Image (cartoon, rainbow, N blue to C red; front, side, top):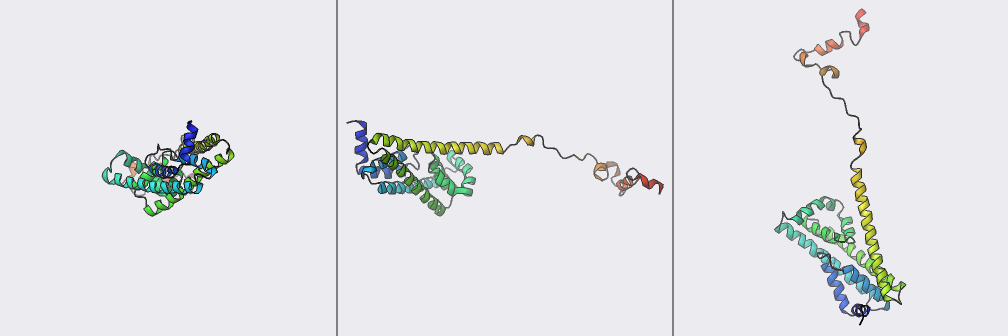
Length: 246
């Protein structure tokens, strides 16, 4: 039996539903598991009706939702038991961004390799509100499951007569979209870093330094204790020479 026949037998077996649910759940804190690849592969074979595409999407979303909450709980436990640990220090660096735009980070982190684990753990470790976390996690889980299922299904439809090619196209599209997102994120981060420093700051004119009281209209060190001395010098005739003849 060749490899493709083994994959087809696995994808059309009822066990695939349990595998999708388990992998999508564990992927929250074990990011090396190929949960997205399995969902895409199952969706490619769903073109024939077995397995069921709607059931694939529902189980993938449910697993992602449950797994994110387990990761959130792990973050809280780490805060309580190891408040000065390396992971907690990393979470504290993410905290300002998370509490300012947490919804966008939770949803976007679902599509970044390793990003899901970092975001959900930091949410629990930094005390991000659970109700808001649940809301945005539900959006992220449904979006991710629907995206993965549809990518695989479109690949299967385009190459229905060749399951191997359909599987390759589905996985290739997913990897390409992920790589494009990483590239955009990297470029935007470099631009923000470059914008924080400007070469014009080196040539900016400096404000003049007041070295003595005469330049500022105040009494110098010699006139301390003599009120009106500075005013007398100003009106002594040097600044208004026309008053000498009056």
